[in-house]
Amino acid sequence: MKAVRLCCYMLAVFAIFLAAGCGRRDNRDGVYEVYYLNKESTKIVPVPYEPAADPDSVQKDIKGLLERLSEDPGEADYKQAIPEGVKVLDCVLEETLLTLYFNEEYGSIDRIVEPLVRAAIVRTMTQVEGVECLTFFVGDKPLADNDKNPIGVMTDDSFVENPGEQINSIQSATLTLYFSNQEGNGLVAETQDIHYSSNISMEKLVMERLLLGPKGADAKSAIPEGTKLISVSVSDGVCFVSLDETFRNQDYNIEEPIVLYSIINSLSELSTVNKVQVSVGGDTSGVYRDKFALDELYERNLDYVLEE
View 1 (cartoon, rainbow, N blue to C red):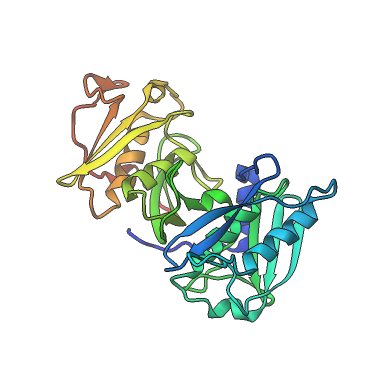
View 2 (cartoon, rainbow, N blue to C red):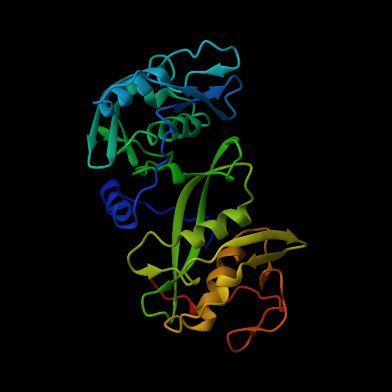
């Protein structure tokens, strides 16, 4: 089933993120990057910011960055990330979770621009030492998406982009991914609502999310730990995936078809993909483990998917 939204309540998502670990980006030598919107409101752009040195700087840095996000950057090419009229009424840092409380005006932000606003705030604030996760409240309610599902906890990784490239326009997608069950003999379907940069292909997005692993406790990654994606491309409905040599590492607690169809079924959820070929370092000779020939094109097979 394609594009089925998963309703994740904030506390459940928070527990998952704590279990999996939150992501953050360290600032370099006390220099932060404050993210603003470009004048067309189609992407976010970083501008260096160096606060005054202070031994008790965490709370002051949080306040200073929020003020910067709310101020006119003074550059014709940039817009402040937090629009005029939108106010941060309170901010609370508990453990590694920073909760921001906005006034009701936050709800008036254009729904197309809002993910960019959120990305700019999250990417700016996760540079602060000790801040790894954020949640937003509007009034006394958690921020929700267009279907009224709580957005939940966000990290820098919630807004996927190509490493070393500037974030382009932020888009939303619901992916259906297939992971191994804990016994390693079946596939568990998991839907993930994510925000991503338009400069990344959906096929790469699927593979990166598979390599990150599931969010649910009833599943685990079928792909050998440490495997890296070399390339992924699509031609005439065939998706060609190349993984590094680590993919050959064997975990016999996970059955062979579960490893392959975790990849094949996940990619086949995309409308652009009808068949999948998996290679190791571009090499399609031989077999994976015992019987899966690497030069074959494989179609979706839901026989291994367990009923919810």
